[in-house]
Each structure stands twice: as structure tokens, then as C-alpha cells.
Image (cartoon, rainbow, N blue to C red; front, side, top):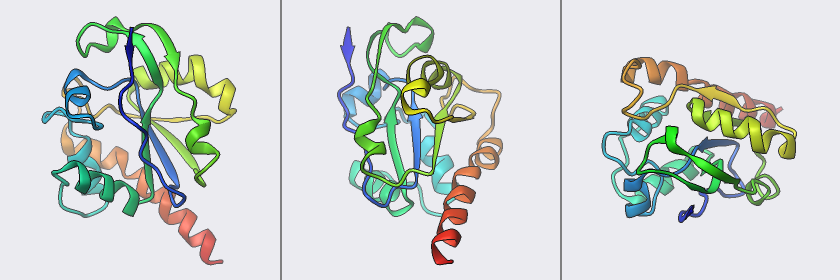
Length: 169
């Protein structure tokens, strides 16, 4: 059983929550989300918000918070071989109330079908909130180019803009 070693990133201005399934071996080594250099999460989200790709953990954390994004994973612990989502067994879900009780989250997005599967199985009935599935930024999802991912992931910015407009009224 491997326990999730990375704390969630959020603050009291976080409007959207992006959930992965479980951190890869590389992410667990660097102790931050989407730590594998081939994962396209940082490239895609930076493009969505018209920013440079953050490089350091501090830059990545600042990027997320500046853009009202909370990040965590659906799974708190599981058995997994390497980083292969297909080998995940014995899942224990994260308690999302840590974020949901402390940030005005307006929308929840899951990064890929595995995160969606475990969110629906373990978390949706607890939060009583649906999650929107976005195509995975994993390099294993080779059918999706960075440009296609940016187009699909643009919904996260649209959601934030909509919420900011509502706050202005």
C-alpha cells in the first residue's frame, strides 16, 4: 500500500479543483503534482492562462494559486505497480472536505478517465458534486496533442471568468 505523500494545493481563493488519480513515481520523488517531465499538465494549463510554463515547485504553486486552481488527487492510498493506473487496487479515497470546506470551489475537474472512474466510485456520493472529465495530460494519452488538450482544458479558465463576472455583479 502506497500512501499519497503530497499535500493538496489550494487557498481561500481557489475556484476550481483539478483532481488526478494518484501521483506517478516521478511526482512522488519530486513531491509535487505532475512531476514527470513528459506530463503535459503544466504546459497545457500555462497555455490556457497565457502564461509561461512554471519550472520550479514554487513557481508551479504560485501559478495555481494566482489562477484560482486547487490541485489534488482522488486517491489517498492504493496498491500500484510503478505509475500504471491500470494496476491500481485497494483504493482509499482522499477526503476532499479539506479543500471543499475551506475554498469556494465552483467546479471540479478530473484529469483523465482513471481519475473520473475513482471519483465516481468513491467520491461523488460523498461530495454530492459531479466532476467534469478532461482528457488526460499524461504522455500515455498520445492521441491528444498539446493543442487539442489546450482547447479542451480551456473550460477551466472559462469557468473562472464566469465566476469572476458573477462576483462583479
